[in-house]
Length: 167
Length: 211
Image (tube, rainbow over all chains, first blue to last red; front, side, top):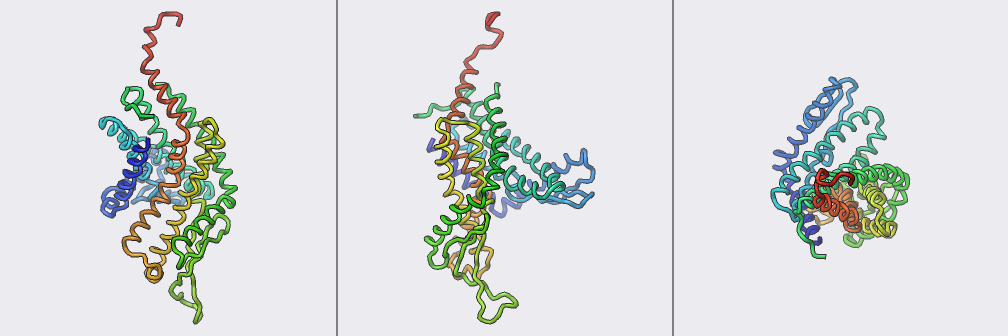
C-alpha cells in the first residue's frame, strides 16, 4: 500500500510538472481545451443553435454570455490523477492501458456535462454558477475519478488480476 | 456485473456532498481561522525576515509582510506601501465537505473519530496550498522589485509556480480522497470480495430449478 501511495505521488508530480511545461501546454493542453469547447458547443448546438465556440470560449450569440475553459476546468488534472492511480497500482500493462483509455473517456465525458451545465447555470444565476464552478463540480469530478478507479480495481479483482498484498 | 454497492455509495456521496458543501460554505469564516493562523505562523517561521503573520477577514486570509511595493502613481513623498498577499480559504478548503461526504456515505466503523482525524490531517494540505498562493503573489505577481527583497531565484520561482498550481488544482480534491482511502478500506474490501464471489459463482442456468 505504501509503495502504491509513493508511486502515485511521484508519477503525479512528474505528469503534473510535464503538463505545465510550455511545449506540452502548446501542443497538447491548449488544443485539447479548444477541442473540448468545440465538442461542448457541438452538443449544445443540437438544441441551441445560438451557441458558438472559438478557441477555449463557448458563447451564446443570443445574450452574449460566454464561458472560457481554463486550467482546472479542462479535466486534464483529473485525468493525470487517474493515470497516476492506475499506473501506480500493480496490474498487467494491458489492463492499465485499457483502464487509462476508458477512464479518460469517462472523466472527459463527465467534464463535458460540467462545461454544459455551467454554461447554462451562468446564464441563470451567477452566484449558483460560482458555487457550482468553484466547489461542487470540482468535487464531483474527483468523485468521478475515484469511482472509475474503484470500478477498474473491481474489474481486476473479478478477473483474478490483483496481486496478493502482504498484510 | 452488480454495481449496486458502488452506485449506492456514489449516490449517497453526492447527496451528502450537497449538504456538507452548503454547511461548509455557511461556516467557512470560522473554518478559515485555524488555516489562516497556522499558515501565518508557518510563513513567519520559514521567512522571518519579511513574513509577519496572517490577518483574517471572513474567508480571506492576508499575509502581513514588510515587503515594500514600488511607489504607486499619486503616492505622497515618504509613503510606503507594504505587500499583503491574499488567499481565499474557500478556494483551498472545499476538500473538507468532500471528505465528510465520503465518510458519511461509507459509514465506516468509528466514523466520527476517523472523520475528525482525517479533518485534522487535511489541515497541512490546506496550509501548504494557502502558503503557495501567498508565495506566488510575492515571488511572481508582485514583480522583480519585491522578488529582489525576498531573494527568490529563478529555480525557487519555478518551484513556487508548480506548488501553486498543484496546491490549487490538485490538492484540494485529491487530499480528502487519499485520506478517506487511507482511513476507510471497508468499501474497497467489500467491492473486492463481491467481485471475487461473482467470479466464483456458477452461471444462473447451472442451478437446479427451485434455487
